[in-house]
Length: 78
Image 1 (spheres, rainbow, N blue to C red):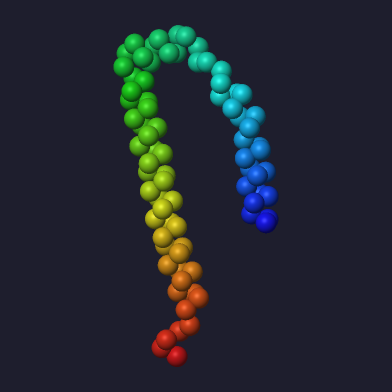
Image 2 (cartoon, rainbow, N blue to C red):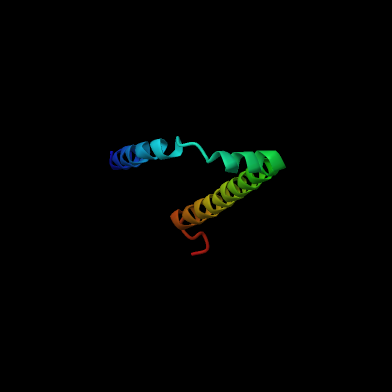
């Protein structure tokens, strides 16, 4: 129940961010980035960074899961 409340609080806190993100970029910025072909490079770099973060988080999650499993199991040597 507590996790659900925290999740709802987090989602509710993100609602105002949509109004800030809805603003358009200045036209000179869009013209410069699209005109020179740099927008595709920016999108590619952001995608690579996000994929790297997701991969890192998945690796950390696997390690933590393995450590938690080892702590739960009693020592078989004793």
